Image (cartoon, rainbow, N blue to C red):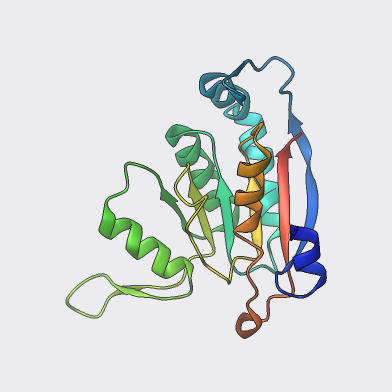
Length: 188
């Protein structure tokens, strides 16, 4: 059964696709083993003006969204994107990469799913997260039905990987009022 049929039958959330106003030029990227070369992708997607424009637009387009998962090209790109999202939104944007410790990752994902964590012995806490950037960590095997926006700041030649990334937002979540998932691409 295909994705479209599952959406049409009401088993998965609708996807609303939007392309960003500014897109990266990927014409010069090299391909190795059926995928873009990582260094080329990082250079193309990490350009300061592109990152700032994409992040500003993500924040604008997600004003009415609850949980935005952002796919980045590298750890450095992920940190740059998170800083720009925080700057434009005034909200924390967490980062999950291969450098994230297991407790840090668990805390971020718990908060991203709508939870809170205690931060000290005196009752301090951190509440839910709206934005999480990641690099190759939350592509498969991650289930957060509340995700209502997926931002793709990472190009891929793989149809399977593209479906996996977009699929993070297709889980139904009637308890959060989710009606669809905005799928925003900054790459073509």
